[in-house]
Length: 468
Ligand SMILES: [Zn+2]
Image (cartoon, rainbow, N blue to C red; front, side):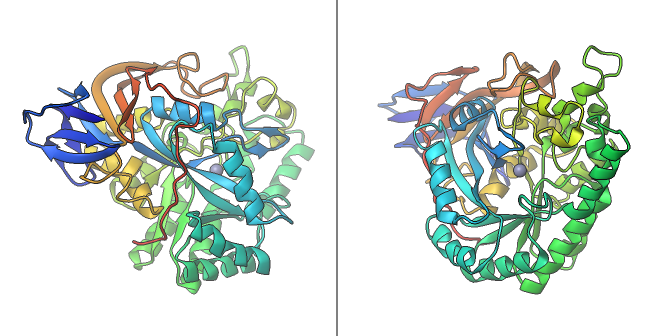
């Protein structure tokens, strides 16, 4: 199969150039002077007036995640089809080592969820709920199998929380193995006290999710995680950083030359605590805020500028989604009358590129920085580069042909995520994928799935060790 993407403008993290992209056997075979005549092409894609960019890599998703008595509403099939429609061609999801169980069992369970279902390529991180001799031993087997990053939580006491000694042991072990520790850095023990106090005072509305998880809880956790990584002499990656003071802790660490990395998510750049207050005059009143419950919580609007500046200045490296959708009906409903029982999470895997492109249009970030944030940096940090994350000879032909002029209205009715609302309902965006290719195969064209196979065409990605 030979495909040519012609007359487009290629964009990588470093360069913008006119080239025709020749794809053979699923890989980028050549970057050619525009207009080069070729014979025996099976398909030509006209990219005149469009950008040809690496497919998005979403390094933080939770397909079919069991949480709070229910399960995230997208599975690996619906979630990856939605991702592809939005220009994302790779996800890295989180498998879970459950308390008292092995990483092997967790990895097998996630392989079973994804295999035969995923429509695009996928890798796994491993969530560690305990760092004991057996799980520390398990880490080596995971790394051998291409699961080269581990996530630990300072939040969610009794479920995911691990203490500093366990985090420190896992970090030392990760250092030996060339693996990366990623951290959810809110300090969960005092947060739980604030939650109990709020409920005891009769505060049940969704906005109390934010009011009981203050910014300082994240900033302090971030500082602690950074200190532990510094003591262990290992790199560390903060997931879903949401607020100014946590960002400042990362900046201080980076200024001291430490290998500290951080991601934020579109919800922290575009939504705010006001969304959690719902719509007091609307039909759903304050309950509407339940659709915006995620963790860390949405912050007051003034944080947006700090996070955008962090992205522009390389203090934040990645925008991932923390895609973890729950329907308003039956799922978010579990927390009516008790905000602490609202399942934590928002849909996002499909809308990341649409939203972040607004940053390019508003000149907050350059187009090259856009590519770096949504594809190249996550590929490098998580051991997928240069197979994924760039437009270069030899790379997988995961390509988005991006139409910068195409208008699109975000709505749960037209988006493909399996969830009954959108946090961005009715928002008009300009710039959308015209075509999406995965390993050289045209899978989405003008919002239609066009590949023959959908279910299970995605392949598991064995990721490399940390190498930055
Ligand atoms: Zn998450």
